[in-house]
Image (tube, rainbow, N blue to C red):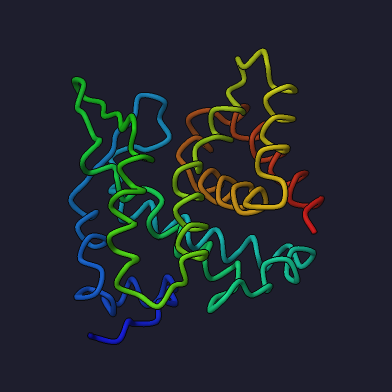
Length: 212
């Protein structure tokens, strides 16, 4: 039986093509280009978007030292930060199969579920424990929940936020906050909808300060 490989992902290594042979599914995302009607993605490849999210993650960790000890905690073979970086690399891996063109726009309904299935097969190649794999897949499955919660038209915000805190407290609440923050901060929403962008970013900044 072939020994399973370690999997430490950085933006620099992914950009350099270091994982081209080990992660062909990741590099295949260069061919999936989004132009979403909500203007979050404007002729942007899933590959470029994913690297942008990972870069934003690194900056968030650098700027928020209060979360350092939380994410430095080791699960089995990997720290929570390392697992989050892996999850971020695969969070949109299901978009290729989910992407539907509607005129000039695209939508990717259900990409989270497809992403879990694809990522599960990929992660089996590496030396992740079962618990670590499940954490990564849980993050991928739920990485959109805060995007939906923070829709400015949401009339049930307080209740839904309470429900999310209860559901993910003690598991991946911190990971979902940080990943959603990173997913938003470099989005095209910054210019397409500056008021909504500020509303979302203000929420993530406030929540990040409470994580410990």
